[in-house]
Structure formats: structure tokens, C-alpha cells
Length: 291
Image (cartoon, rainbow, N blue to C red):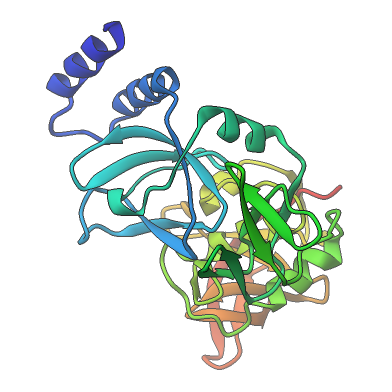
């Protein structure tokens, strides 16, 4: 009852600024009391900034990623993605509910494998679902995994990476020529920070969702020459805001999503676009998460 009153009061004060940090904190508080969770049981689910089909996609859920349900409307559900705490809206008809016990178990379990095939299939009874690189398979073992005691079959490959630098670069290579898609995290469309986040996920390392959030972590490097394979380079705009990120290859080049996922030369000025014969991104800082 107290939680409901808190939400009502905050709604009255934030009708025009529903995205305010205070409102979001209140929703998270309510979600913790309601303990409602879901999991992505589709290839991917678009996550939007506002509860509208016309709203921009800010990220995607991949198969097997779970979330906390914060608010439900007639057609939309407001969620907090567990692995990166991202707040967004998904269509209510794409919600697949799971128990709080199962959600808590997979949140802390190490028995979760990551799909390393660009595209593969999972089967549950007679239903077949495609899964993409970076998808999660809870309690995977010997070709099968389960969601709430429902068994699924999977015949593809899973990542066995322990976080080696070369692994991160090799995972990124799988996305070469993937078209740039704002909010995307799949081999069919991906953005710059989605690429870095999913490649680190494949290497069993967690990163936040957005480039500016990723830039707040790790150990700073002073020179491009210090950067090794798997380190990240960040780029800013004229206002000094971080707007781009890519993965260093350790060979004087960077793999990043800009138009498409590609490899370009990089130096202390930034990324040099050979085709356009000019610098496309201005280097701001370099970070290592693998020291």
C-alpha cells in the first residue's frame, strides 16, 4: 500500500517528465516489492524509449536474457534488464513471465552458456526458434538447456572463452559487414556500444549498454601504442560527449560499427576512413578492462 501511494504521488509530480531519475527509482522500488520477472524467448525483442511503436529502439533483448518487470500498461511493459540495469519498454505481447525464484537463480548462476554461432536454432517440443550470436542458454549442458523446468534442445556451438584478448577481437570479426542499427545487438543490425557489449559478453565479461557508461569503467591508457587487442577506444563530439566506441585489434586498427561493422586504421588523432580520406571520429580516451 505504501509503495502504491509513493507511485501515485510521484506520477502527479512527473506527468510531463516521466523519464526523470526520481520516477525511475520509484519504479525500481515497486518492482522489487512485486517481484515480477520475464525472459526473452524470441530471437530478439526491441526495447523502446517510450511505450509506443513509433518510439526509438534503444536496445534489444536477445534470447535467454531476463528482466525485471517494473510497470505494466495495456499494451506495454516497463522493464529493467538484469545484466546491465537498462530501463526500457517492450511490447506486452512479447513478455514471457518467469518466477522470481528462477530469475534469481539464473542471475547468480555460472551455469549459463552463450551462443557463439552467428545463427542457430533451439527447439522446445514442436516449436523452433532462431537464436543469434550472443544469446543466453540458462543451465546449458550437452545440447540442452531449460527455462522454468521446460527443456530446450540446442545443437549449435557455445562460447568457451575465459576472457582472452584475442577472443574478443575474434568475436567482433563475426559481425563484419553487419549493418549499423541504432539500439541493435544482433548480427542483423548492431550499434557501436552493442558490438562492444556483446563481444565482451561472449568473453564472459560484463559491460554497461551505452558508450558513455562503458567509458566510466576500466583503466585509462595514455597512448594508442599501449592499447592491446580487446581494449576499447572512445570518441567524442565537439561538445566533449562520448558518442562512439570500438575494439582495438592490437595491430594499429580498430573494429567498430559505423555504417556497418568494419576495420579502420587508428592513431592518436582518431579513426581514419580510408575510403573518404579523412578522420571520421576524434579519439577521446582508451580503456583496458583486461589488465
